[in-house]
Image 1 (tube, rainbow, N blue to C red):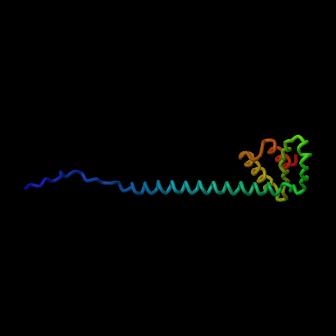
Image 2: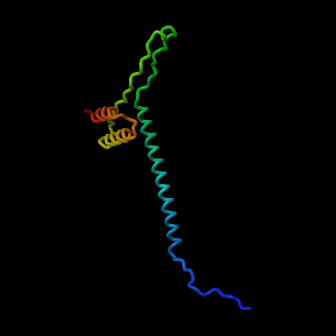
Image 3: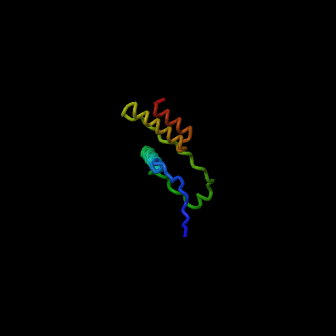
Length: 130
């Protein structure tokens, strides 16, 4: 009754740094994901503030023309509505820093596609007083 024994080989030694490396990798990925989502949330908040500021600057259209009666409406040819120009951005009394902030905000709105290049140029000219 001889029992066969496994040959004595070299024991498997795991490096001590592997769990630390894995933890650092997982932690780094989680940090980057959290930072990216926070940056996206901040960008969304800035965009909402810019939209609210622009809406507050636009004049209200409370005096809308009355709707024509049915026979008159049939006789008229439909006309496309005129494009609405952006409200001019008035320089604030805060000084040069507020003007630069408004220029930066206008640039961001133009990059996001919310302003056409013509609207951006007109708003910049009124902001600078040119």
